[in-house]
Length: 133
Image (cartoon, rainbow, N blue to C red):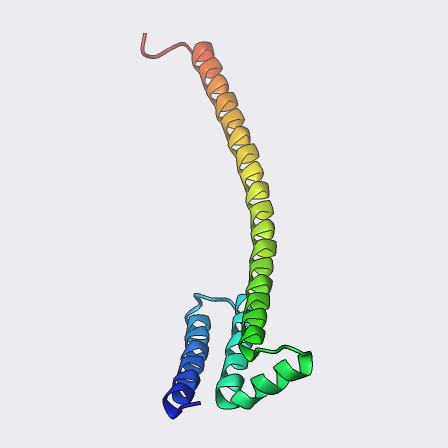
């Protein structure tokens, strides 16, 4: 591996980790969503610093081309991220549905109370005589 490729791998992995940490620091990315991204960044950094680790892992797992292991792990991490987001989306949709139902009930209750208040006001005006007549 050429020194330029070696350095590029390390810089790219470090930049990815810095981006993840910065997004977490700013509150743009929550910790529970950053876990798999962080795992991927750390794995990329380990492979960038110690490229022979990838060759060793591929041979240990019986994978002929080490790059295939990279793709397999990347697809696995993306699958886990997608699964996590799907589960979170389901929870958020359920909360949103519950809040929408509660809001509808509250709006209905307020409308009913306003109608009753208007009815009482109208009855009180009729009983006292309409001052505008």
